[in-house]
Amino acid sequence: MTSTDKDAFLAVYKEIETDLISDIQNLPALSDNVKQQLINYYSVCIPYTVPGGKMTRGLTVIKGVEVLKQRKLTDKEYKDAAILGWQVEWLQAFFLVADDIMDASITRRGAPCWYKKPNVTQDNAINDALILENMIYQTLRRHFKKHPSYVQILELFIDTTFQTEVGQHIDTNGTPYADGKRAPLDLSRFTLDRYQGCVRYKTCYYSFYLSCALALAYCGYDPETTEGKALYQNAEDICMILGEYFQIQDDVLDAFAPPEVLGKIGTDIEDAKCSWLVCKALELVTEEQKEILMTNYGKHDAEGVKKVKDLYRELKLEELFQTYEEEQKRVCDDLIAKIEPENFQDLFKFLLGKIYKRQK
Image (cartoon, rainbow, N blue to C red; front, side, top):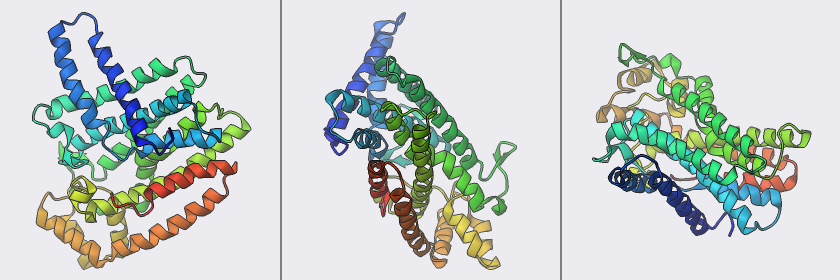
């Protein structure tokens, strides 16, 4: 079993799911009928929201442990790394269920968003997001309570959750609210400086750094030692660059990738998001082109969305992204080549290979 074995990874997911459903079965002071209602509901919710993605975040934990151990993992090591990997996927599920509600998204992974299911609605989905988060800590306690790095692992999840929620706030308030509704569009808020801060917190930590740091923590690297501090810092430095590259890819795909390929219907324009595309557009537009953005950006109107996308094409932003992508690839390759110890480079080569020129 290795980091490329998705079937083995999914088998560990099934074990975790079974344990969590058993926890519901064992809740005290509830009738069998109420317990069965809960079991029926969460037996659908968990597999609908947690697996189904590319699983890169989770598999990265396994890859990290393999790289750091420099050998094939024992069955126990593989299962531990897979369990940690699935907790990153659970964190992703918690964020996405909530994010889809906040963005009024329609589809996720080619299916209706969880809150769009007729028997779910926003009322249940908000609570479900909180339950998915809690399940992370139930699972960590079950499997790692006696592990020497248990507290460090817990702190990584606590810190990453907070960092991501800060990023989500910045993202949601690209155009702020006033009197219960969106304030008038203020294009001056859409700057690359704001964008980079948002991406660092919203994407880089949970999508890249967390998996690498969990591998380091599981393998016993102490961030307080000289060696450990350097390893965690190297991981953070490269993950911030990979994360920004990944999010800019996401922004471009949101606007231009076909929904059937992307697996969701992009809504960044309608939601007036501070995306890379709008930030770059504002650096390039004439006053006449800027008026197109002022009139149409942030409007839930298909014709307005088309006008914004047409402007992006007129400004050749897709071509600009392709140039940026090649530059970032060179920057990442150079940074990775400088990482010590040399075997640790393989983890970041793995991550870069997963995202370079991705289509969804």
